[in-house]
Image (cartoon, rainbow, N blue to C red; front, side, top):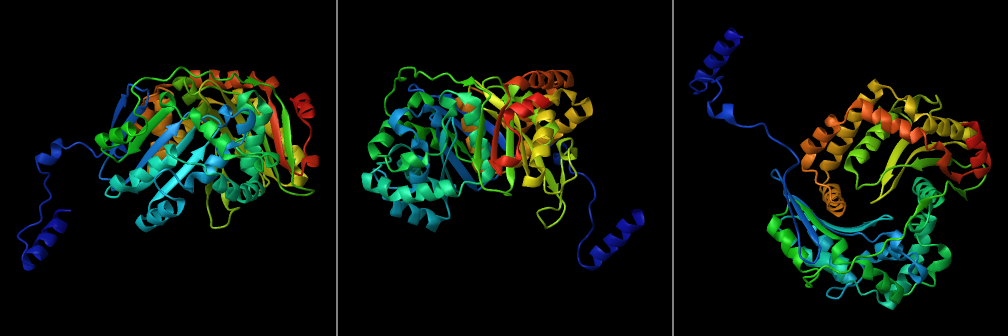
Length: 462
């Protein structure tokens, strides 16, 4: 090593460089290691109930800002059933200040994205752009989220798109939607899609009636990469009333262990979803435990080639079958006060019966996970959280969900500490609790439904 350094110094002298320094500067000894992701999260709650949070990032030049309302499809009733599907589709329509064409034209010119996503619990509007463009584009976010007009002629124009959208729903998305309809009796059973029979009857007045659920006491305004002051100014323009609105009544939902299906025809591929009662997002400790159990079961696969089938499934779910056309993954879906835990499988029609029985048997025996698999699940969950943190849009929407559920997780290191603090015995106890709920299992099937046993047959097998 010394000879190498002497040689390099000799070369540097020939090039006019006096010497090569290999010593550590005294200043560098006291510099902390770089921390990636959110460095600091500032939070507040306004007098009208709007919750504001802004996460600072290390040198990021792209930002995301989210306006989220706790007003998903579970709040639909009577005439406005299916309203959230229309609102998602009409997020690019005209508002009180800008036309739909004007908004899309400028957003495309700036390379920005304005998206609307929703589930049964919440609806989120997110703007992604550079920091320099945000002062101008934030008005387009406001116009889309809280000032949409829902003109009757625009509602009429969007109906063919809604019908086409219903035909193009991916089978995996459809089976998860049907599963929750099979699982819940009550408002959580409402689909995130509008029923085809209700599309033609939807009116702008019904949509305006539904957006009354966009209330300040159920609103979160969050950002990643924006100054806290800018985020607070945006929140102040949403509603000028300084008092919290009256508490809103939320309809109760109860597990019903149902069975739903959607037929794609004979010999078509089959998607099977099974679920048992899980936990709500309000209980952070229980939420992390269920997420670790799902990760320990297997939530995906590792790609080892360019072809779609060149992958290695995560154990132990990936070891249930050697069929390369069959895929399994576990999932955990949590709403404010309740949730579901389940298994999703995709296979061919010829093996659908066997795969359904394997999935049901595995879900009823989650308690058999061992400590080594739990430790692997912790590492998988950490990796998935870290990957999500790299996407500013997902990070912003995650921060909004935290505010809505009164949870504070400041960055990756905070999440990792929580995961590490949960003992293996606690997680195994959670797995045993999941297995004990097997009699309340709900099932949904999309594809060749004749190839899958009925729910009663599956429950008898386990």
